[in-house]
Length: 363
Picture (cartoon, rainbow, N blue to C red):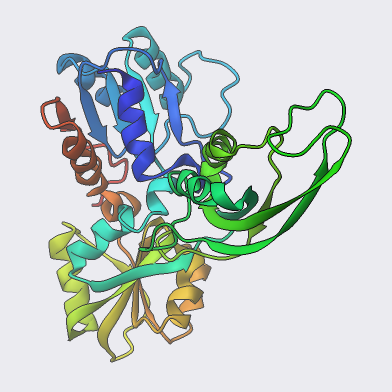
């Protein structure tokens, strides 16, 4: 099996188009066409993880956090990033990162957190915009069904509904000039053709394939179509997650459960409000930007990490905000990555790192 097959599996689960603008997900080190001898799943990539991959005869590390996040101008071993990259290159270990795109899918990082808390009826807290487009194509009546079927292979899905389209009949006109090879009509004469207008919605990363499918299925030499960006959101993509507990609990019980389920020694949190907690919002990693969204969604508690001092004030005595630590919030992502790959590659070596990569210690 080649590394590109592993990448295809991961990107089918969380397309790179879902990553945030500041991110650097994808294949960071190594070649797609290299044979894959084994996979190490990890939250982070460090020199120790690279050494572990070598020991276990795995030549691919799949991590959540990109080891190369900002531009590298030199590789001199001056810091842990440079040393890790040098080690990976020297030891022929490929490194793939699946970061904010894994955060932004409904079955990704935040679902894993929500499951550990015991939340049900899960939904994305802040749906992502600008990930949909609409294609409008025109096909002769007798070819409309074949064109629709081709478009459905690459798009036409909205939530849990597939083969979604809108169709209307009308009349198209064209005049074939010298040098054309028209499917219908004559050179130099205006032709009228009864056509079907077909509208299909697709995700932005599907555009190349959907245009290709249209042109291959369409009988015309020159295919008329339009592509429009849409501001519509899809509820299966976006930041954070919100859900309900099976039964209301106290604020102190929630924090106690967090300490047990996430193996925490301490939790930073806002003041107790003497509220029963039934609806909880979560965001793996740095999630302070979602405090207002959690409040607006009616959550009584918001679980995240990396909250700065002044950002705790954003709770405004309306919601319990708990910072459980960056690593701690995302620690089960390693399990998620291993599960995704094992589900696809049943008889292949997919291992979870045994290296403790958390750089933060508590005294």
